[in-house]
Amino acid sequence: MSTMSTVPEAVRALAEADFGAVAQRFTDAGFLVGQPAKGIMTIQAAGSVRASVLVSVGVHGDETGPIEVVAHVLDALSREPGKLAVDLMVCVGNIDAIAAGKRFIDADLNRMFRPVRGALADTAEAARADTMIAATDAFFAGAGPVRWHLDLHTAIRPSVYPTFAIVPDLIADAGKQALVKWLGQAAIGAIIMNPQSAGTYSYYSAEFHGAAASTVELGRVGTLGQNDLSLFADVGTALDGLLRGDAPRAAKAEPHVFKVAQQIMKLSDGFKMAFDRSTQNFTSLRQGDVIATDGDTVYTVQHPEELVVFPNPDVRVGLRAGLMIVRV
Ligand SMILES: [Zn+2]
Image (cartoon, rainbow, N blue to C red; front, side, top):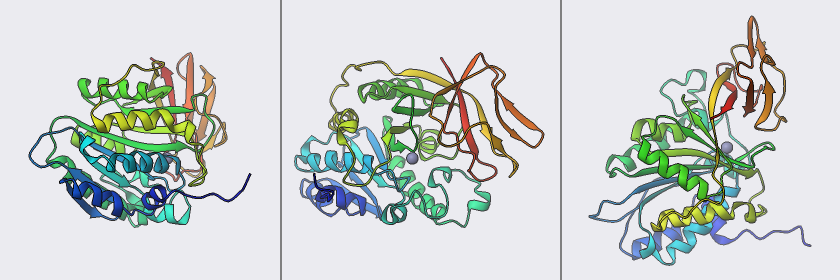
């Protein structure tokens, strides 16, 4: 086996925020194609109200698997452009971090989608978030009632559920049901209903544009061109079907549904967590177990069982260091 890898042209192009070939094919087919900012492309059909679908990748620059998946889906669709059945916005999130092969340049981009950014206001990511927000607002401003936002990520640590999704609780029922169905078709193992924004991109689209939106965690961080795409096959198929307007297929297995029991906020530099970043997502804790201490604040498990996701004691003060969830 060679250690050299060849990155397919479509994947290289998307990773470099180069929509050239894909944009040209949809333009030639009569679509209105816009590129409001680097790494952002919209493809719309004139004169008809269609579903509006936003697909974002690379919000964390080291999460390259979804870039590959979306590049292949988009490339194939652009070769039969008449099959695109929705208005589409594709957003490559942290383009500078992707180019640098890093998760972010100054700070986590997926905490910037909130009105007050405090100490994060001067970061490179704050400026990128402003650009993404402007394009997102413009895309949904003219949209019909059916609105989607799939923000595709890969998890940075092992997980009891290799694929899972965070779904804002405030999404209206019809959109939420369609989204949960789609997540099932994409073979997502678990869904966490989230009642509160952590400043994420998908929550922003749900809260301010009524989109059926989700942060979708797919498998593991990997190098561009070297991801095991068999791990992403189901989500690729489901995404392709959504963009072509296919009727949703039945889920292979219904996702397990969880809700947030408590958010663990890092209040000071004295924050100490009972576990570290290497802890698996969905690790189970028992009532009374200490989760973290922060000065006089002691976070303990309140329910008979709570599971931890996204444990990260290394976040900045004022940010979420972990989520505790319970089975619904
Ligand atoms: Zn991510």
